Image (cartoon, rainbow, N blue to C red; front, side, top):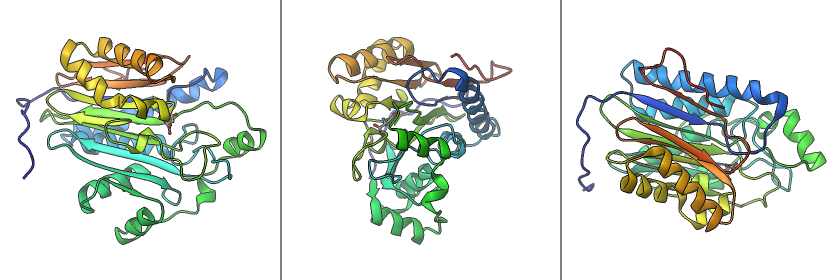
Length: 299
Ligand code: ASP
């Protein structure tokens, strides 16, 4: 039997926040990133506004970012040292702590959807590589040619071995029932060894949601994020301080000081208040709630 969690009384104000990865300032490409996170947050928002679940909202927003070639997830993912694509993704629903993840998948255009199927239909939390591929097939998810996920920009970067503009994606949402969900999706680190799995596939590291506290999606140096179990620790700070911006800031300090890495995170608390922080020059963020006529895109 699932453990009983404290439920937040309904109805609540739906809210969604998305990120497009912590990294360098992309200069002229900033407008494309703004447009990308804005469109994604509106897609997730439409789900919530129509009474849909937080889980559907974060999945929809992350799919939009996976489909956008400017972000390092789905189409546009960075390449491994072998020139291949290996993507990680995870998703979590915070009422019953249901979660699912995939790692090192290469033939799926929307890894976040496969992560959700793992959560709902496999009885497991994490599937990787060929096993994940067979499961996707059994679930009727369409395979894509991995070549179709390689954008000319990432190919050029791979060939030139340019510095990484990361660009992992994530979303956290709360629906009318007070359920919080979070999701993260990435191509990982540019030039990583084939077989490397980062934080984005690991529940508690890259993604976490518990409806009585809130939800988190992280981005940045995956090895450092794993060392400090960043997503769960951020929620612990949130529980202590009851201040999303403060919790996000303290969590990023932890990442830098104890994890010895750089990155950022977005966070949403059980009241629908958002917070975010990053130690990198830039992290595209967009958010939407009923009080706003237009998405806020504060970067
Ligand atoms: N955290 C991701 C990873 O290490 C990369 C990123 O967020 O940019 O795979």
